[in-house]
Image (cartoon, rainbow, N blue to C red; front, side):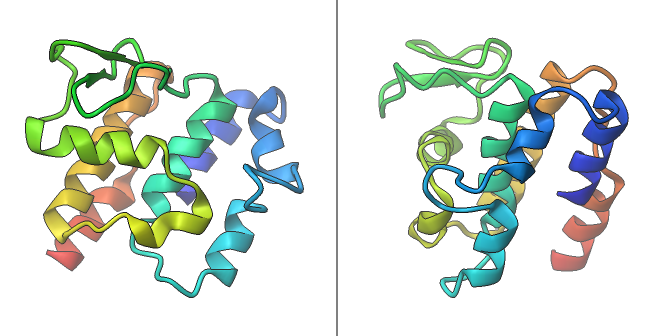
Amino acid sequence: MVQVDFKQVQRLKHGGTHWGFFAERSFDNDGLPTQMLDLNDCGTANFHLVFLVHYSRYLGFYPNTENASDTTWFDSGNGTFVLLPATTSPHAEYNHLLTQLFGMSFDHIDHLKLNHHQRNYLAEYLLNYYALHVDNFGKPKSFNVLQSVFS
Protein backbone atom coordinates (compact mmCIF):
# COMPACT_ATOMS: atom_id res chain seq x y z
CA MET A 1 0.00 0.00 0.00
CA VAL A 2 2.83 2.33 0.83
CA GLN A 3 4.53 1.78 -2.53
CA VAL A 4 1.25 2.34 -4.39
CA ASP A 5 0.70 5.58 -2.52
CA PHE A 6 4.33 6.69 -2.96
CA LYS A 7 4.01 6.27 -6.72
CA GLN A 8 0.94 8.51 -6.67
CA VAL A 9 2.62 11.11 -4.49
CA GLN A 10 5.43 11.32 -7.00
CA ARG A 11 2.97 11.55 -9.88
CA LEU A 12 0.60 14.09 -8.38
CA LYS A 13 3.15 16.29 -6.58
CA HIS A 14 0.79 17.32 -3.76
CA GLY A 15 -2.15 18.11 -6.00
CA GLY A 16 -5.39 16.63 -7.15
CA THR A 17 -8.02 14.68 -5.27
CA HIS A 18 -5.51 12.08 -4.09
CA TRP A 19 -5.02 13.85 -0.78
CA GLY A 20 -8.72 13.72 0.01
CA PHE A 21 -8.41 9.98 0.55
CA PHE A 22 -6.21 10.56 3.58
CA ALA A 23 -7.48 13.95 4.70
CA GLU A 24 -11.21 13.23 4.94
CA ARG A 25 -12.55 12.49 8.38
CA SER A 26 -15.14 10.13 6.97
CA PHE A 27 -14.68 7.60 4.19
CA ASP A 28 -17.87 5.69 3.41
CA ASN A 29 -18.80 6.19 7.07
CA ASP A 30 -15.84 4.00 8.00
CA GLY A 31 -13.28 6.62 9.02
CA LEU A 32 -9.79 6.88 7.60
CA PRO A 33 -8.47 3.64 6.13
CA THR A 34 -5.45 3.67 8.43
CA GLN A 35 -7.71 4.16 11.43
CA MET A 36 -9.77 1.20 10.28
CA LEU A 37 -6.64 -0.92 10.11
CA ASP A 38 -5.71 0.08 13.66
CA LEU A 39 -9.20 -0.43 15.04
CA ASN A 40 -10.13 -3.55 13.08
CA ASP A 41 -10.30 -6.58 15.35
CA CYS A 42 -11.78 -8.88 12.69
CA GLY A 43 -8.51 -9.50 10.86
CA THR A 44 -6.55 -7.57 8.29
CA ALA A 45 -5.79 -10.17 5.63
CA ASN A 46 -7.92 -8.41 3.00
CA PHE A 47 -7.28 -4.81 4.03
CA HIS A 48 -4.87 -4.14 1.15
CA LEU A 49 -7.47 -5.30 -1.38
CA VAL A 50 -10.21 -3.04 -0.03
CA PHE A 51 -7.68 -0.19 0.23
CA LEU A 52 -6.74 -0.54 -3.46
CA VAL A 53 -10.38 -0.59 -4.54
CA HIS A 54 -11.35 2.51 -2.55
CA TYR A 55 -8.13 4.37 -3.37
CA SER A 56 -8.93 4.05 -7.07
CA ARG A 57 -11.95 6.31 -6.49
CA TYR A 58 -9.69 9.15 -5.39
CA LEU A 59 -7.35 8.57 -8.29
CA GLY A 60 -10.23 8.84 -10.74
CA PHE A 61 -10.73 5.31 -12.02
CA TYR A 62 -13.04 3.63 -9.53
CA PRO A 63 -15.05 1.07 -11.48
CA ASN A 64 -18.60 1.72 -12.58
CA THR A 65 -20.43 -0.93 -10.54
CA GLU A 66 -23.93 0.02 -11.73
CA ASN A 67 -24.31 -3.23 -13.72
CA ALA A 68 -22.37 -5.45 -11.31
CA SER A 69 -24.07 -8.77 -10.61
CA ASP A 70 -23.38 -12.48 -10.44
CA THR A 71 -23.98 -12.69 -14.20
CA THR A 72 -21.70 -9.85 -15.36
CA TRP A 73 -17.95 -9.71 -15.91
CA PHE A 74 -15.59 -6.97 -14.85
CA ASP A 75 -13.74 -5.36 -17.76
CA SER A 76 -10.73 -3.70 -16.16
CA GLY A 77 -9.77 -1.94 -19.39
CA ASN A 78 -12.97 0.11 -19.27
CA GLY A 79 -13.66 -0.15 -15.54
CA THR A 80 -17.19 -1.44 -16.10
CA PHE A 81 -19.20 -4.62 -15.76
CA VAL A 82 -20.22 -6.24 -19.05
CA LEU A 83 -22.36 -9.19 -20.12
CA LEU A 84 -19.56 -11.19 -21.79
CA PRO A 85 -15.99 -11.64 -20.56
CA ALA A 86 -13.51 -9.14 -22.00
CA THR A 87 -9.81 -9.77 -22.58
CA THR A 88 -9.16 -7.87 -19.36
CA SER A 89 -11.75 -9.75 -17.29
CA PRO A 90 -10.60 -11.94 -14.39
CA HIS A 91 -10.72 -15.72 -14.54
CA ALA A 92 -14.25 -17.03 -13.99
CA GLU A 93 -13.54 -18.37 -10.50
CA TYR A 94 -12.43 -14.91 -9.32
CA ASN A 95 -15.00 -12.70 -11.04
CA HIS A 96 -17.64 -13.04 -8.29
CA LEU A 97 -14.99 -12.37 -5.61
CA LEU A 98 -13.98 -9.20 -7.42
CA THR A 99 -17.62 -8.13 -7.60
CA GLN A 100 -17.91 -8.60 -3.82
CA LEU A 101 -14.68 -6.72 -3.28
CA PHE A 102 -15.92 -3.68 -5.21
CA GLY A 103 -18.91 -3.47 -2.89
CA MET A 104 -16.87 -3.98 0.30
CA SER A 105 -16.40 -1.31 2.96
CA PHE A 106 -13.56 -1.21 5.46
CA ASP A 107 -15.77 -2.27 8.32
CA HIS A 108 -16.88 -5.43 6.51
CA ILE A 109 -13.46 -6.75 5.50
CA ASP A 110 -14.00 -9.89 7.54
CA HIS A 111 -17.05 -10.81 5.41
CA LEU A 112 -14.84 -11.56 2.42
CA LYS A 113 -13.47 -15.07 2.92
CA LEU A 114 -10.43 -15.66 0.72
CA ASN A 115 -7.72 -18.26 0.69
CA HIS A 116 -4.08 -17.47 -0.03
CA HIS A 117 -4.34 -18.11 -3.79
CA GLN A 118 -7.50 -16.05 -4.20
CA ARG A 119 -5.99 -13.15 -2.24
CA ASN A 120 -2.81 -13.20 -4.36
CA TYR A 121 -4.75 -13.37 -7.61
CA LEU A 122 -7.00 -10.45 -6.65
CA ALA A 123 -4.03 -8.37 -5.46
CA GLU A 124 -2.21 -8.93 -8.73
CA TYR A 125 -5.36 -8.26 -10.73
CA LEU A 126 -5.94 -4.96 -8.91
CA LEU A 127 -2.32 -3.92 -9.45
CA ASN A 128 -2.77 -4.65 -13.15
CA TYR A 129 -5.96 -2.57 -13.06
CA TYR A 130 -3.92 0.31 -11.62
CA ALA A 131 -1.29 -0.17 -14.33
CA LEU A 132 -3.98 0.16 -17.00
CA HIS A 133 -5.21 3.47 -15.60
CA VAL A 134 -2.14 5.13 -14.08
CA ASP A 135 0.65 6.23 -16.40
CA ASN A 136 4.02 4.62 -15.59
CA PHE A 137 2.57 2.79 -12.61
CA GLY A 138 4.70 -0.36 -12.59
CA LYS A 139 4.17 -3.19 -10.12
CA PRO A 140 5.38 -2.45 -6.58
CA LYS A 141 8.58 -4.37 -5.77
CA SER A 142 7.23 -5.46 -2.42
CA PHE A 143 4.48 -7.49 -4.09
CA ASN A 144 6.82 -10.24 -5.34
CA VAL A 145 8.68 -10.28 -2.05
CA LEU A 146 5.48 -10.71 -0.05
CA GLN A 147 4.23 -13.40 -2.40
CA SER A 148 7.40 -15.44 -1.92
CA VAL A 149 7.42 -14.96 1.86
CA PHE A 150 3.81 -16.09 2.28
CA SER A 151 3.80 -18.91 -0.27
